[in-house]
Image 1 (spheres, rainbow, N blue to C red):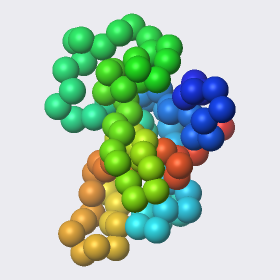
Image 2 (tube, rainbow, N blue to C red; image 1 turned 60 degrees about the vertical axis):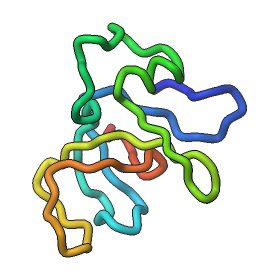
Image 3 (cartoon, rainbow, N blue to C red; image 1 turned 90 degrees about the vertical axis):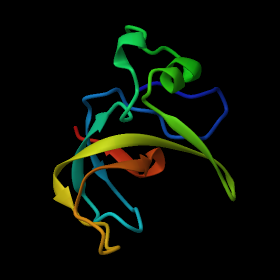
Length: 107
């Protein structure tokens, strides 16, 4: 895992292929297993060999930043181990965008 910026209290982004669990999210069940993936539609041929800082993570399709009510939201794309319902009635889903605050790497 890499740190974002010195002094910024933000969870670290995880490399593609990392097995994770979603913990504490209001929509996804606690402990939902998944794998970090590159955002759909991102041209992987243009990725750098290895991301080394915030800008590289953003440009490699591993992290998306959106503006939230309380600041920026950093999220990553995950592929669930099995289709998972978020409780909205629209699922189950095979993949989703999840705020990195709720992602924990499996040991």
